[in-house]
Image 1 (cartoon, one colour):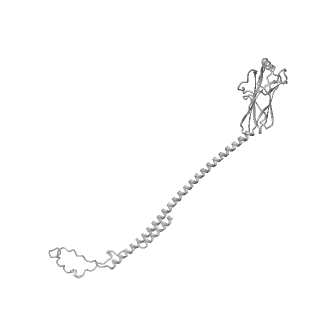
Image 2 (cartoon, one colour):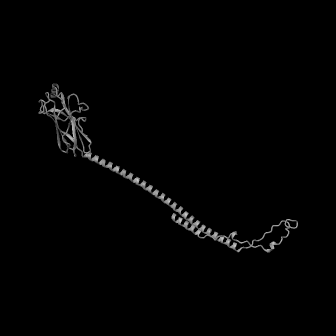
Image 3 (tube, helix red, strand yellow):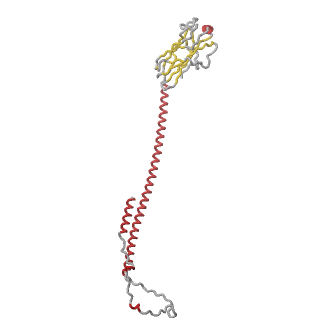
Length: 312
């Protein structure tokens, strides 16, 4: 649009220069007219301003000059012609200016409308993204909940299957015990380890409320995983206890009891730590016989102690 306006201005200026008027005839080109002979006669006495002829201003009509009249008419025609075209092109320029203003206003309106639409689209996209994130988070939580429920119901479960004494309790030898566990859960148990300890408690007393473990007698399984239904044995476990003659006599006479307690730790499928604890008491298999590996075994308590026997 601007190049078209510039073209119109150029054409109008060129057209104005091509219509220059003819040069006027100045006073230089006119020849002096000869004075009439009557001007050589002596002028009568001028009585103006006297008592006979007071001051009078007399006007003389101008003599008609055909050339002058024609020039003035040509000037008026040229002036009217230029003014008419100047008015036309001024109107044209004003119209194009208004048109440019209208186009600019329309462009501003379109830009604001597009900006508003883009802003609305961005807001809608933001809301959609937030809804998608919220939905994804809800899905993740639901999946995690389902996984936790599945693992909670399909998890490994280790229980103590046997606890055997391997040595005679009378003498200078340490008490040695063999522990046998089995995984009766639905999935494999990993990183199995544990610890045992022994205690001699009088028959009129109870086990300590909190099991004591030194932390120095931890045993570890040789296998990385224990599948469901598989048994695992830990032989030759000891806490380095040696029974004195008095403790041995008290245990044999029934005035004291020899307890063996411990725990087995393992990991489930998601790496969650699980623990199984146990507690057994040594009882003779033959009444009145000496307590040894041949005629004594560890058996469950008559009343289960929740501090010593549980699974989590």
